[in-house]
Length: 284
Image (cartoon, rainbow, N blue to C red):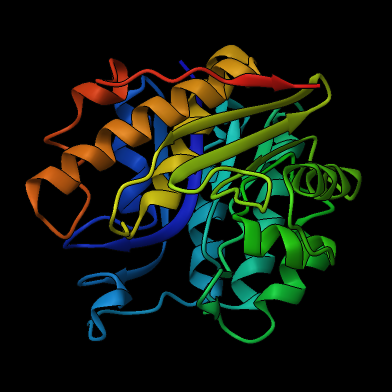
């Protein structure tokens, strides 16, 4: 069984951060050790929430306590998403180094949550620069959206070829594998959602129908599902195809329910046997 140490936020109501990632990882057959960076009543998209930001030193202390159990050598991957401050980011980078010192085969999977097209940056000051300068060089897998990819590489993309070039530029700066979500461009059909995965063995693209609403926590879900399948198979194309199949199936169930939050429990069978299947196409 694979094991993931997941350092992310948590919400009591709804699904974001670890509250979006842990159950799909577990349902995929991956053991998860969650470490929380915040413990909020709900995600911040509601405009109001309660609960504490957990100090970076306390998060580091939790990781230290796990290490004192002499079990970090069992961890196959460190997963991290939104980083509330550069100080928290440093704790995560240090945790990745510690995990790798205990298990040199472990990977650091980072979702560089910073912003999005149409919204710009929504993270705290200093986070974009920390991601670019400190996370990119040490990550093994990164899962940026198109906005984040452009920032991290300093490139502007308008075509699929330019997105691919930017993904390879990001790989040249650190991560061996890059998953780009929400891929769009002038030479690509509208009304379709695309993900691009690039690694040492090539690049693959997958397309799914575009649902007509947004979903908070879907990025956290996408990264978790991709990591689960990558850890189990090491197959980039297969992991991409299964990620698209699982995530689309869950998002469709959520859209049909009319509920505002991801319906992870209601759609849990789709985590292991997705209702819809999509194939990844190699790019030449």
